Image (cartoon, rainbow, N blue to C red; front, side, top):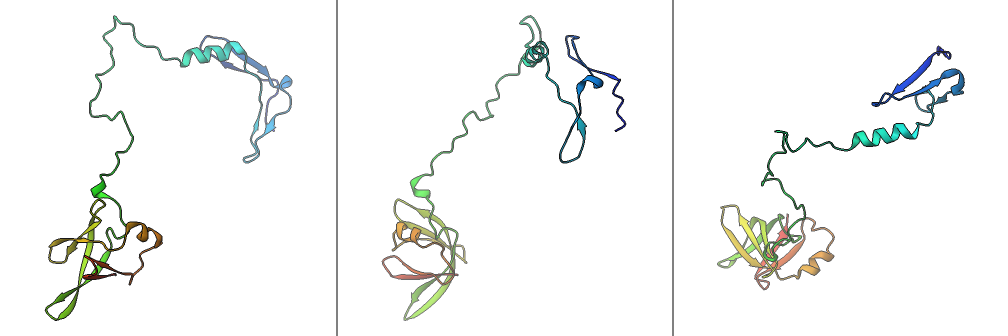
Length: 171
């Protein structure tokens, strides 16, 4: 083993008390299961653990000292709870989806790409951002609860806006 059992080992505490043990009387060492290291285990006297408990308590400087705590930083948050989203800025499954909307121009239907950028939960409307930078609000025909039943808005999912005047397709 390479361990000198006659050697005296001690562990000193801050107060000068020592926990002494001799390997001859310590018994057989335990073996750590993963790395196979040999070690001994023995009880630590109550006086030593009491000293350790006292040493861990914070010691503030006396009031006469020039050392003080810094002032409270007003920019450090004290409350970490989240504010509820406003009703007009709610989540919707169509939010941030890329769509193609079908718009009647004259007698011809044309499909235009757009993205859903906002959802107003109070009015049940989505804001569509077009390729040319124009943004237009459209009333969603399907109720939010019905959208929640659809697990995922996969490509080619179809729906209508503005009382079925505008048809859309998820791309």
